[in-house]
Amino acid sequence: MKRFQKILVVLAALAVALTTVALQPAATTGQTKLTMVFVPSRETDIVLFSGQQLGRMLSVALGVPVEAVVSTSFTAAIEAMCAGRADIGALNPFSYVLAHEKCGVEVAAVSVRLGLPFYRAQISARADANINKIEDLRGKRFAFVDPASTSGYLFPAAMLKKMGYDPDRFFSQTVFAGSHPNVILAIYRGQVDGGSTFEDARTNVQAQFPDVMQKVKVLGYTNPIPNDTWSLSVKLNPALRAKIKDRLLRIAATPDGKEALRNLYSIEGLTDKVELTEAQVKELGIRFDAETRERTFRTAGKVTIPIGDWYFQPIRDAAKYLGLDLTKLAR
Image 1 (cartoon, rainbow, N blue to C red):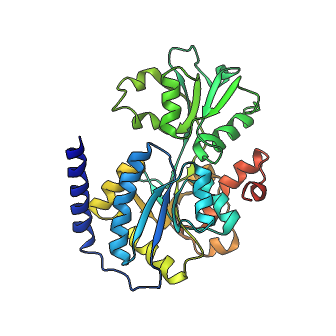
Image 2 (image 1 turned 120 degrees about the horizontal axis):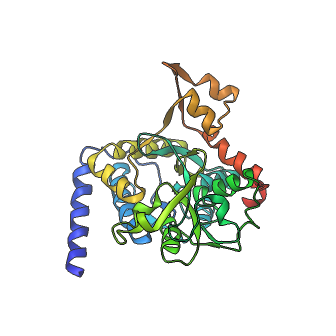
């Protein structure tokens, strides 16, 4: 096993070297080291390994050492960004919004999956538990991911409230499992009756548990959610922030960068602008302010807009609907 792990490390290093040959290092900006933090959306060892690959690619492309770390929780990632312990954050949408409120963290790009800059949350249950609709979860045991998880808490809780159920009283017991795979496994093992995750988190554990698709079934989906972010600390100088964004986008377009992103969080690519149909804008609940509207480009029934904080208004709306005060949460 140790020999196999060494081979993986060597192959990863070679992949990084080949990828970054074509990426010319940026001019130095006085920064001696950068730290990139990843949220524990899935197994920590997988996130760390893929994150370190991206860190090495970015280090070569920038000419600055980049250390990759995995936070112990979603909230810990926010704290790392705001306390100056992390400069770059692969943050889920709710964590980004909280970090933006707390210390002005800026979004540089968002992830793309299935060709889309948004996704959904799903509520699942054990297939043999005689639970066929969300209403059947009343009085049952339920697992959320993390209080700062968008698809693992915020949007499912808001959906329950819109259905007329108090998410704090609807279940007999609620737990925070820490990651999306943990929620699926808790359902699979019968530790809880249902849970909320991103769509479709079952695939993250399918290799180890091939029958998970049969034992854990989907009951329903939330409205669309803006995808996870690649965010930057405003403590970095603007020139360096621009270079980091540029290099991340370029790395994401390379074969090795794509592989690392796919292994990391099932990401197809990164984008610094979104292209949405009018129907998608309505489904997401996006409202354009005057400044954003001036930067939009409309053609063939689609709207193209540079990514920015405006894109995450639906997160704030869901939090407000649940009665959450973001200013207090961000303290």
